[in-house]
Image (tube, rainbow, N blue to C red; front, side):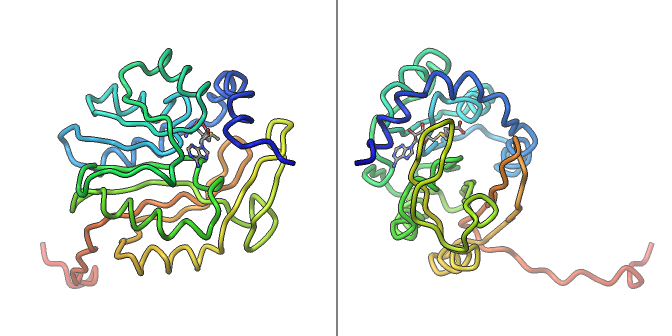
Length: 219
Ligand SMILES: C[S@@+](CC[C@H](N)C(=O)[O-])C[C@H]1O[C@@H](n2cnc3c(N)ncnc32)[C@H](O)[C@@H]1O
């Protein structure tokens, strides 16, 4: 029988944390943060791990960060490295928050550990938890990582078989659109030799304004 994922993460939390610098997210975080408005707000980090680099980035910019993770050891490391982060020891699928509570929600390298059959429900909750102008950022596994259009199974990571799950990107986009999200950006990025789909969504609908053709501009 496969060991529960939280136990596996407990086992390699220290090793994971020591190698975390290999995946530099500075550019992604700069872009995401710059579009959230000037005032610090409230961020929810689903699968926060030790709070680095996500929680730390936002805390350093005066945001209030709440992290959710089901690995006790990851949260012990978070208490050491990101003590300002409020942490909740729980499964991402089980947590509940009041409506319109967060300016931003992130799920970085964590959503792919949740069965894809639960993704729509989770996106619906995230939509509810976000403020009207809120945004979410997450990584989604695709064929580039698992080798399959859709996946529901185990893949080796740091010497252990971990559960991964995803739909096709098109099915994901449809789920998000059906919920009411506007897809702001969707990029396949290679970070630390791993390709994932990085998605930013906003609750606010895009305002489509007619841009004059370049030749129409008068000086
Ligand atoms: C690959 S680590 C990523 C940690 C952090 N977001 C980062 O970017 O370094 C995945 C984290 O998600 C957590 N996680 C995975 N599935 C989860 C679930 N269903 N509920 C709560 N935490 C989960 C794991 O315990 C682990 O800390």
